[in-house]
Amino acid sequence: MAIATQAQILKVLKAFNPWWATGAVHPDFTKHYRRFAYYEAMKRLEQRDLRRTVVLTGTRRVGKTTIQYQMIDTLLKRGVPPQRIVFISLDHPMLKLSGLDDILDCYHANVWADKDCYYFFDEVQYASEWDKWMKTIYDLQPSTQMVATGSASPALIKGSTESGAGRWSVIQVPTLSFFEYCALIGVDTPELGPDIRPTAFLKMTQQERTSVMMKLDGIQNHFSRYLQVGGFPELALASNDLMAQQIMREDVVDKVLKRDLPSLYKIRSATELERIFLYLCNVSSEIVSFTAIAKELSGVSRPTVRPKEWNSGSADIKRSLAVKSAIVLICSTLDSRLLWLCTTPFGLPSEPEVKRIIAASSGCCLTCARRGASR
Image 1 (cartoon, helix red, strand yellow):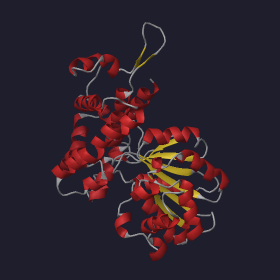
Image 2 (cartoon, rainbow, N blue to C red):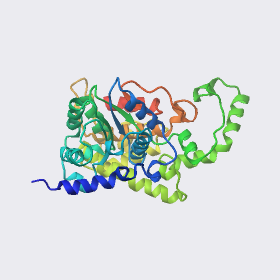
Image 3 (cartoon, rainbow, N blue to C red):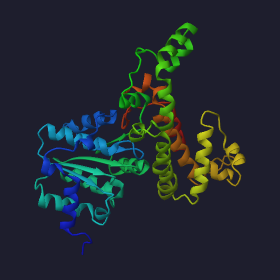
Image 4 (tube, helix red, strand yellow):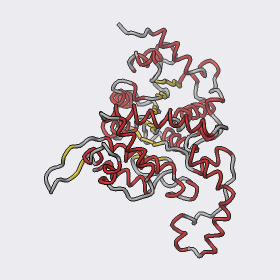
């Protein structure tokens, strides 16, 4: 017998989908600023001849759920019937007790009978065998459009390469670029011209470099604050920077290091992982060796620091994945936090990569992350 009854499931769905009654998304959910990932997601949702399920992935608090609400708001304003759109937050306690098939059966039995609808799954990784269900829906319901979000990026990317091959596109939602940060808080950015990039400074004269820096002088204080709290939309709009930093530590860093990564990679010591993470943050601008990390962090062995290495030409030795996960995480974070350094000025969007989209991102740190993941 099912733990959650259909009446209980329907009650939760009505709470998550107020537009069934009002016909509109509440303005507090849609916000006023739309990130680059929103436009990438809408472009793929509207591409009917190349049907793809859209999967938004990224760390907590970067605005994935807000992007879904903005997409729903756009569909409603285009005349899509409100009952044709269902938003399902799969981390809700009641929905965790239900199978995805039970939730969808309840929706179709009580709200919208046809399958020509839009499914919006939030935190889809909480659903049992979510990738197989999404594959089944894609194959058996050709008129159904799906958009999903998830905070466990490696799990979602793995699912996309297995069940999702040729069926969905993964769009990584990074933390705010400096350009997005300025647009969010209403700061005017100086006009530098499309040809100005960090690498161009090497060929500039001293007078040209001074001219550029004078133009940037007005936003220097904003950039300093951006490095402290600006990566997350909610925190960027906060009036108390100290509290914003504390919330970032509690909601993002602690949960990722002490819960997400240990459960995902079966890491035995979350304390060692946190120490390595903090060490890498402090030396992120330096050349770091595995031996130096093990030496300076007493109690952490070199095999733990370097999880996989060659042993005099013999076969690979299997090691803990703790540090490799941390290195990939750090590089990915730096890639998204410092977009303006590795794309166009101020993090303006560049051409997305093929297969896996990283909204407004393509840079050197991402290359480092891939190298770490391939070792």
